[in-house]
Image (tube, rainbow, N blue to C red; front, side, top):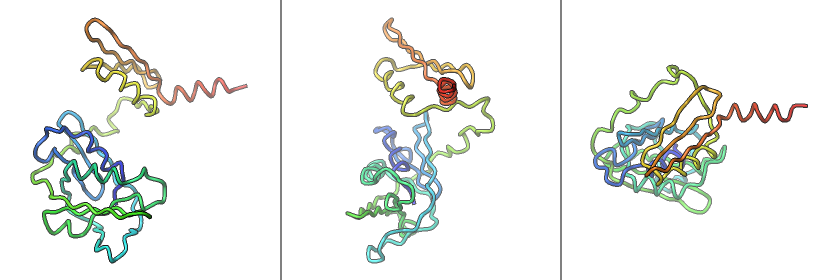
Length: 207
C-alpha cells in the first residue's frame, strides 16, 4: 500500500524528461523521483488491511517487481487521495496483482464515496540506481532539524529572485543563513533549527 505522499513527488518531474526519469519508480517499500540533480524518496507507510471489495476485481499484490509509473498517473492518484490519517487504510493505494504479469500497472484507491482505478502503461527502461548515491545518515558531521512549515515558505521567497542561493551552515544549534543576489540586489534569510527554538522557548517559560 502507498499513500498520497508516495505519488505527489511526481510534481517534481521535469516536463521535458524522457525515458524512466519521466516517471516515479514504484516498489513495495518506496517510491523514488529524480532528475539527476535532485532525488526524492518516500518510504511506503505501514501496511494495513485492504478495503477493496472482491467484486472490484482488485487483488492486492503483497510483493511485486518495481516499475516506473508515468507522471500523469501518479499525480492523478495523489489528487484523489486525501492526506493520510493514522489508521485509515482508505487513504492508501494498492497495487493489483495483474501489474506483475504484464506491461500495464493497475493501482486502485478506495474510500467511502468512490473507487478510483488507474491503469497505465509502465515506462520501459532502467530507472537510475539512486539509492546507492543517497548519503548514509551515519556519515553526517551533524544534524539540523527544521520546522518544514517555516523553512519551505522562506525558500519559496527566493524563487524567482535568483536562480542560485547559497546556504551556510555553522553548527548544529545555530541558524542556517541563506543568501542570494540578483542585479545588485541581495536577499538574506536565517532559519533557526527546531532544537534551538525549543530550547529558547523553554528558557522563556522557566520561572
